Length: 160
Image 1 (cartoon, rainbow, N blue to C red):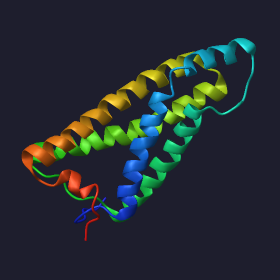
Image 2: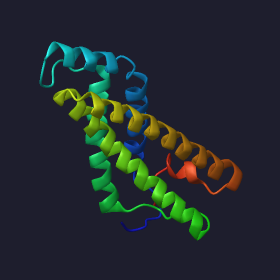
Image 3: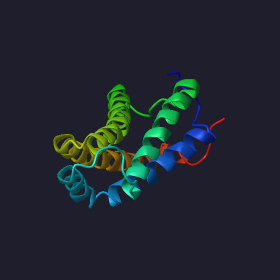
């Protein structure tokens, strides 16, 4: 991926759409464990009726794949700070992308296949995604208001 001066409008839009989809999926997950258990016990197979959680999860997967394609094509600005900070930012983003792909795939696999263990792993990975995303947000705030390097400004105003 190449570096750029800033994020494009589409990159900014996809970033915030992903944040909303992930938050929405997190806040609608509570009843999914019971629903999966009932599905397994009843012997129902296949996709079944979609729920807000499953719809948001599948949309998140679609949007993250789109986001990856856009990032490969357009690059991303280099991280501000020391080489260690840049390395931490790179690996933090890689873990976020990995989880943004793995969590919905795991959820889909658990739901369609009726795999309770995969569902448990999906739930754990989902919590890890939320924790890392919150860390990502906290670091963005720290960069914006403590380091004063314009990190959040780059995520609301397209670059040149």
